[in-house]
Length: 120
Length: 120
DNA sequence: CTACTACTGAACCATATGGTTCAGTATGCC
DNA sequence: GGCATACTGAACCATATGGTTCAGTAGTAG
Image (cartoon, rainbow over all chains, first blue to last red; front, side, top):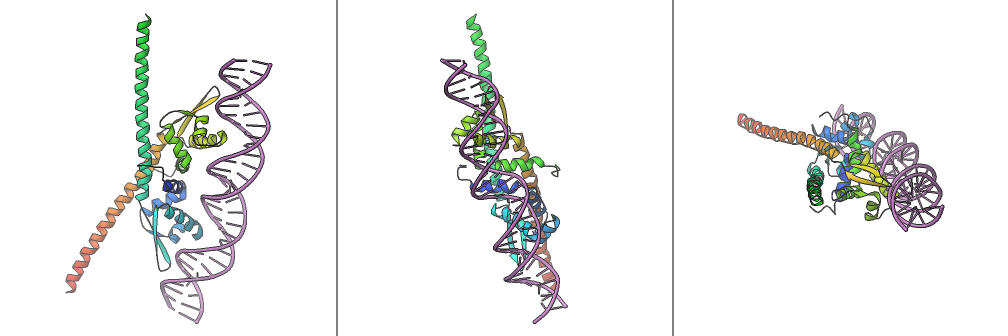
Protein backbone atom coordinates (compact mmCIF):
# COMPACT_ATOMS: atom_id res chain seq x y z
CA UNK A 1 0.00 0.00 0.00
CA UNK A 2 2.90 2.31 0.76
CA UNK A 3 4.36 3.20 -2.61
CA UNK A 4 7.42 5.12 -1.40
CA UNK A 5 9.71 2.20 -2.06
CA UNK A 6 8.54 1.21 -5.51
CA UNK A 7 11.68 0.86 -7.58
CA UNK A 8 10.06 -1.92 -9.60
CA UNK A 9 7.37 0.37 -10.93
CA UNK A 10 9.98 2.37 -12.80
CA UNK A 11 11.24 -0.77 -14.50
CA UNK A 12 7.76 -2.19 -15.15
CA UNK A 13 6.34 0.95 -16.72
CA UNK A 14 9.52 1.56 -18.71
CA UNK A 15 9.44 -2.01 -19.99
CA UNK A 16 5.84 -1.58 -21.10
CA UNK A 17 6.59 1.73 -22.84
CA UNK A 18 8.04 -0.02 -25.88
CA UNK A 19 5.82 -1.27 -28.70
CA UNK A 20 8.10 -4.22 -29.46
CA UNK A 21 8.13 -5.37 -25.85
CA UNK A 22 4.36 -5.14 -25.57
CA UNK A 23 4.25 -7.20 -28.77
CA UNK A 24 6.53 -9.79 -27.21
CA UNK A 25 4.29 -10.03 -24.16
CA UNK A 26 1.34 -10.50 -26.50
CA UNK A 27 3.08 -13.29 -28.39
CA UNK A 28 4.16 -15.00 -25.20
CA UNK A 29 0.49 -15.04 -24.32
CA UNK A 30 -0.02 -17.62 -27.06
CA UNK A 31 3.05 -19.77 -26.54
CA UNK A 32 6.46 -19.95 -24.93
CA UNK A 33 9.06 -18.84 -27.46
CA UNK A 34 12.83 -18.85 -27.86
CA UNK A 35 14.90 -15.74 -28.43
CA UNK A 36 15.33 -16.82 -32.05
CA UNK A 37 11.57 -17.26 -32.55
CA UNK A 38 10.96 -13.75 -31.27
CA UNK A 39 13.87 -12.19 -33.18
CA UNK A 40 12.52 -13.66 -36.43
CA UNK A 41 8.98 -12.57 -35.74
CA UNK A 42 9.97 -9.00 -34.93
CA UNK A 43 12.62 -8.84 -37.67
CA UNK A 44 15.44 -8.03 -35.33
CA UNK A 45 18.86 -9.40 -34.56
CA UNK A 46 19.22 -12.02 -31.85
CA UNK A 47 21.24 -9.56 -29.81
CA UNK A 48 18.58 -6.88 -30.12
CA UNK A 49 15.80 -9.20 -29.04
CA UNK A 50 17.92 -10.53 -26.23
CA UNK A 51 18.17 -6.98 -24.90
CA UNK A 52 14.40 -6.56 -24.93
CA UNK A 53 13.98 -9.86 -23.13
CA UNK A 54 16.57 -8.69 -20.63
CA UNK A 55 14.53 -5.56 -19.95
CA UNK A 56 11.30 -7.53 -19.58
CA UNK A 57 13.07 -10.03 -17.35
CA UNK A 58 14.54 -7.30 -15.14
CA UNK A 59 11.06 -5.84 -14.83
CA UNK A 60 9.75 -9.24 -13.78
CA UNK A 61 7.32 -9.37 -16.68
CA UNK A 62 9.02 -12.33 -18.36
CA UNK A 63 10.73 -15.40 -16.99
CA UNK A 64 13.29 -17.36 -18.98
CA UNK A 65 15.12 -20.63 -18.61
CA UNK A 66 17.89 -22.02 -20.72
CA UNK A 67 17.75 -25.67 -21.77
CA UNK A 68 20.69 -26.79 -23.83
CA UNK A 69 21.49 -23.88 -26.09
CA UNK A 70 17.99 -22.44 -26.37
CA UNK A 71 16.54 -19.93 -23.93
CA UNK A 72 12.79 -20.16 -23.63
CA UNK A 73 10.67 -17.20 -22.54
CA UNK A 74 7.31 -17.16 -20.84
CA UNK A 75 5.32 -14.41 -19.17
CA UNK A 76 5.16 -13.68 -15.47
CA UNK A 77 2.03 -11.77 -14.50
CA UNK A 78 2.78 -10.84 -10.91
CA UNK A 79 4.32 -7.47 -11.76
CA UNK A 80 1.38 -6.49 -13.91
CA UNK A 81 -0.70 -6.80 -10.78
CA UNK A 82 1.59 -4.28 -9.08
CA UNK A 83 1.21 -1.90 -12.00
CA UNK A 84 -2.57 -2.07 -12.02
CA UNK A 85 -2.57 -1.85 -8.24
CA UNK A 86 -0.70 1.45 -8.39
CA UNK A 87 -3.04 2.86 -10.98
CA UNK A 88 -6.14 1.69 -9.13
CA UNK A 89 -4.95 3.20 -5.85
CA UNK A 90 -4.53 6.63 -7.34
CA UNK A 91 -7.58 6.48 -9.50
CA UNK A 92 -9.65 5.75 -6.43
CA UNK A 93 -8.14 8.73 -4.65
CA UNK A 94 -8.71 10.94 -7.67
CA UNK A 95 -12.29 9.82 -8.07
CA UNK A 96 -12.85 10.52 -4.38
CA UNK A 97 -11.42 13.98 -4.85
CA UNK A 98 -13.64 14.66 -7.81
CA UNK A 99 -16.63 13.70 -5.69
CA UNK A 100 -15.41 16.08 -2.98
CA UNK A 101 -15.08 18.85 -5.49
CA UNK A 102 -18.63 18.23 -6.55
CA UNK A 103 -19.72 18.60 -2.93
CA UNK A 104 -17.70 21.78 -2.50
CA UNK A 105 -19.29 23.22 -5.58
CA UNK A 106 -22.71 22.27 -4.27
CA UNK A 107 -21.92 23.80 -0.86
CA UNK A 108 -20.70 26.99 -2.47
CA UNK A 109 -23.86 27.24 -4.49
CA UNK A 110 -25.96 26.79 -1.32
CA UNK A 111 -23.95 29.42 0.54
CA UNK A 112 -24.34 31.75 -2.40
CA UNK A 113 -28.10 31.37 -2.16
CA UNK A 114 -28.02 31.95 1.62
CA UNK A 115 -25.90 35.08 1.21
CA UNK A 116 -28.33 36.30 -1.38
CA UNK A 117 -31.14 35.80 1.13
CA UNK A 118 -29.38 37.64 4.02
CA UNK A 119 -28.50 40.45 1.66
CA UNK A 120 -32.14 40.96 1.00
CA UNK B 1 -9.92 -3.92 -28.73
CA UNK B 2 -7.49 -3.79 -31.62
CA UNK B 3 -4.23 -2.60 -30.12
CA UNK B 4 -2.24 -2.30 -33.37
CA UNK B 5 -2.73 1.46 -33.43
CA UNK B 6 -1.79 2.36 -29.89
CA UNK B 7 0.71 5.18 -30.19
CA UNK B 8 -0.63 6.73 -26.98
CA UNK B 9 0.32 3.72 -24.93
CA UNK B 10 4.00 4.37 -25.58
CA UNK B 11 3.64 7.91 -24.23
CA UNK B 12 1.44 6.92 -21.30
CA UNK B 13 3.66 4.12 -20.06
CA UNK B 14 6.80 6.18 -20.59
CA UNK B 15 5.27 9.07 -18.67
CA UNK B 16 4.44 6.75 -15.78
CA UNK B 17 7.93 5.24 -15.75
CA UNK B 18 9.36 8.21 -13.86
CA UNK B 19 9.15 8.43 -10.08
CA UNK B 20 8.86 12.23 -10.09
CA UNK B 21 6.00 12.19 -12.56
CA UNK B 22 4.12 9.56 -10.59
CA UNK B 23 4.66 11.79 -7.57
CA UNK B 24 3.23 14.74 -9.45
CA UNK B 25 0.14 12.73 -10.37
CA UNK B 26 -0.20 11.79 -6.71
CA UNK B 27 0.00 15.42 -5.60
CA UNK B 28 -2.43 16.55 -8.24
CA UNK B 29 -4.80 14.06 -6.69
CA UNK B 30 -5.03 16.32 -3.66
CA UNK B 31 -5.19 19.71 -5.35
CA UNK B 32 -4.61 21.60 -8.56
CA UNK B 33 -1.11 23.05 -8.47
CA UNK B 34 0.99 25.52 -10.43
CA UNK B 35 4.33 24.72 -12.00
CA UNK B 36 6.03 26.69 -9.21
CA UNK B 37 4.18 24.75 -6.50
CA UNK B 38 5.33 21.47 -7.99
CA UNK B 39 8.89 22.65 -8.65
CA UNK B 40 9.24 23.67 -5.00
CA UNK B 41 7.76 20.45 -3.69
CA UNK B 42 10.02 18.27 -5.80
CA UNK B 43 13.07 20.50 -5.31
CA UNK B 44 13.59 21.10 -8.97
CA UNK B 45 13.97 24.10 -11.26
CA UNK B 46 10.88 25.56 -12.87
CA UNK B 47 12.21 24.53 -16.26
CA UNK B 48 12.77 20.98 -15.12
CA UNK B 49 9.28 20.64 -13.69
CA UNK B 50 7.81 22.24 -16.79
CA UNK B 51 9.38 19.46 -18.85
CA UNK B 52 7.79 16.77 -16.68
CA UNK B 53 4.43 18.48 -16.97
CA UNK B 54 4.96 18.63 -20.73
CA UNK B 55 5.53 14.88 -20.82
CA UNK B 56 2.46 14.18 -18.69
CA UNK B 57 0.41 16.57 -20.81
CA UNK B 58 1.56 14.96 -24.06
CA UNK B 59 0.59 11.61 -22.59
CA UNK B 60 -2.85 12.99 -21.74
CA UNK B 61 -2.39 12.29 -18.05
CA UNK B 62 -2.44 15.95 -17.05
CA UNK B 63 -4.36 18.95 -18.32
CA UNK B 64 -3.12 22.51 -17.84
CA UNK B 65 -4.50 25.97 -18.39
CA UNK B 66 -2.77 29.28 -18.10
CA UNK B 67 -4.50 32.12 -16.31
CA UNK B 68 -2.53 35.33 -16.18
CA UNK B 69 1.06 34.28 -15.69
CA UNK B 70 0.41 31.08 -13.74
CA UNK B 71 -0.19 27.71 -15.35
CA UNK B 72 -2.36 25.41 -13.29
CA UNK B 73 -2.19 21.63 -13.61
CA UNK B 74 -4.85 19.04 -12.91
CA UNK B 75 -5.07 15.34 -13.67
CA UNK B 76 -6.90 13.76 -16.59
CA UNK B 77 -7.81 10.13 -15.92
CA UNK B 78 -8.99 9.00 -19.35
CA UNK B 79 -5.61 7.73 -20.47
CA UNK B 80 -5.15 5.72 -17.32
CA UNK B 81 -8.25 3.82 -18.36
CA UNK B 82 -6.55 3.00 -21.67
CA UNK B 83 -3.49 1.76 -19.83
CA UNK B 84 -5.43 -0.50 -17.49
CA UNK B 85 -7.56 -1.62 -20.43
CA UNK B 86 -4.46 -2.82 -22.29
CA UNK B 87 -3.17 -4.67 -19.26
CA UNK B 88 -6.52 -6.25 -18.49
CA UNK B 89 -6.96 -7.43 -22.09
CA UNK B 90 -3.69 -9.30 -22.08
CA UNK B 91 -3.98 -10.56 -18.59
CA UNK B 92 -7.33 -12.11 -19.47
CA UNK B 93 -5.76 -13.79 -22.48
CA UNK B 94 -2.83 -14.99 -20.41
CA UNK B 95 -5.03 -16.33 -17.66
CA UNK B 96 -7.08 -18.14 -20.27
CA UNK B 97 -3.92 -19.67 -21.68
CA UNK B 98 -2.79 -20.79 -18.26
CA UNK B 99 -6.14 -22.50 -17.78
CA UNK B 100 -5.67 -24.24 -21.14
CA UNK B 101 -2.23 -25.40 -20.13
CA UNK B 102 -3.71 -26.84 -16.98
CA UNK B 103 -6.20 -28.79 -19.09
CA UNK B 104 -3.47 -30.00 -21.42
CA UNK B 105 -1.45 -31.18 -18.46
CA UNK B 106 -4.48 -32.92 -17.05
CA UNK B 107 -5.19 -34.55 -20.42
CA UNK B 108 -1.61 -35.72 -20.71
CA UNK B 109 -1.77 -37.24 -17.28
CA UNK B 110 -4.96 -39.09 -18.19
CA UNK B 111 -3.43 -40.36 -21.43
CA UNK B 112 -0.39 -41.45 -19.48
CA UNK B 113 -2.57 -43.54 -17.21
CA UNK B 114 -4.43 -45.05 -20.19
CA UNK B 115 -1.17 -45.93 -21.89
CA UNK B 116 0.00 -47.52 -18.71
CA UNK B 117 -3.15 -49.63 -18.67
CA UNK B 118 -2.86 -50.77 -22.31
CA UNK B 119 0.78 -51.57 -21.73
CA UNK B 120 -0.23 -54.02 -19.05
C1' DC C 1 7.29 53.50 -14.30
C1' DT C 2 9.66 49.99 -11.48
C1' DA C 3 10.27 45.83 -9.43
C1' DC C 4 9.00 41.34 -8.60
C1' DT C 5 6.94 36.96 -9.97
C1' DA C 6 5.83 33.04 -13.18
C1' DC C 7 6.77 31.07 -16.85
C1' DT C 8 9.21 30.02 -21.51
C1' DG C 9 12.99 28.81 -24.80
C1' DA C 10 17.52 27.79 -26.20
C1' DA C 11 21.64 25.64 -25.24
C1' DC C 12 24.13 22.40 -22.94
C1' DC C 13 25.48 18.01 -20.40
C1' DA C 14 25.57 13.20 -18.72
C1' DT C 15 23.43 9.09 -19.02
C1' DA C 16 20.06 5.71 -20.86
C1' DT C 17 17.83 3.38 -24.78
C1' DG C 18 17.20 0.75 -28.99
C1' DG C 19 19.49 -0.90 -32.25
C1' DT C 20 23.53 -2.72 -34.95
C1' DT C 21 28.00 -5.63 -36.09
C1' DC C 22 31.48 -8.81 -35.03
C1' DA C 23 33.80 -12.10 -32.54
C1' DG C 24 33.32 -15.57 -29.31
C1' DT C 25 31.35 -19.90 -26.63
C1' DA C 26 28.58 -23.82 -26.06
C1' DT C 27 25.30 -27.37 -27.82
C1' DG C 28 23.43 -30.70 -31.11
C1' DC C 29 23.89 -33.69 -34.93
C1' DC C 30 26.02 -36.53 -38.76
C1' DG D 1 35.86 -34.73 -35.21
C1' DG D 2 33.49 -31.18 -37.80
C1' DC D 3 29.90 -28.18 -38.93
C1' DA D 4 25.70 -25.73 -38.16
C1' DT D 5 22.75 -23.58 -34.57
C1' DA D 6 21.65 -20.61 -30.48
C1' DC D 7 23.02 -17.64 -27.74
C1' DT D 8 26.34 -14.14 -25.33
C1' DG D 9 29.37 -10.03 -24.78
C1' DA D 10 31.81 -6.08 -26.15
C1' DA D 11 31.97 -2.15 -28.80
C1' DC D 12 29.79 1.22 -31.23
C1' DC D 13 26.19 4.65 -32.89
C1' DA D 14 22.18 7.79 -33.05
C1' DT D 15 18.69 9.52 -30.54
C1' DA D 16 15.94 10.36 -26.29
C1' DT D 17 15.70 11.63 -21.37
C1' DG D 18 16.22 14.20 -17.10
C1' DG D 19 18.26 17.66 -15.55
C1' DT D 20 20.73 22.21 -15.41
C1' DT D 21 21.80 27.47 -16.45
C1' DC D 22 20.92 31.74 -18.53
C1' DA D 23 18.49 35.04 -20.96
C1' DG D 24 14.25 36.44 -22.20
C1' DT D 25 8.84 37.70 -22.04
C1' DA D 26 4.80 38.88 -19.83
C1' DG D 27 1.53 39.64 -15.94
C1' DT D 28 0.98 41.96 -11.08
C1' DA D 29 1.44 45.30 -7.69
C1' DG D 30 2.98 49.52 -5.55
